[in-house]
Length: 79
Image (cartoon, rainbow, N blue to C red; front, side, top):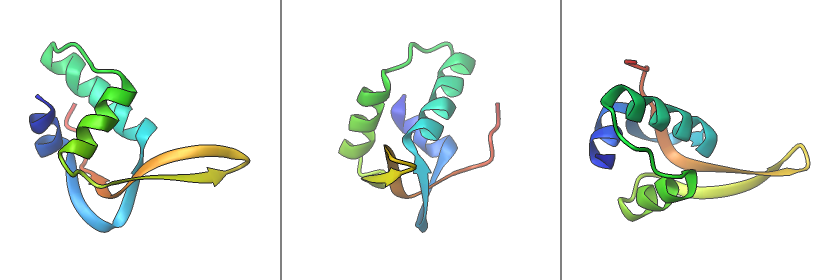
């Protein structure tokens, strides 16, 4: 079902990035609407890496580490 989530919610865009938190919030919404049991945030991130969806990136922001995936953009929410 990860593939369906990606197909409906994410597009490749080399100039864009999405935080892991934003991707995970959308994924949770997708799972709720489709009656699916959600993976953990870490498991989702690992699956996105295995499927070559964007590039995992970490950076410092306001003295805390923030994770994102570069090269992806969330599509408008359908839920």
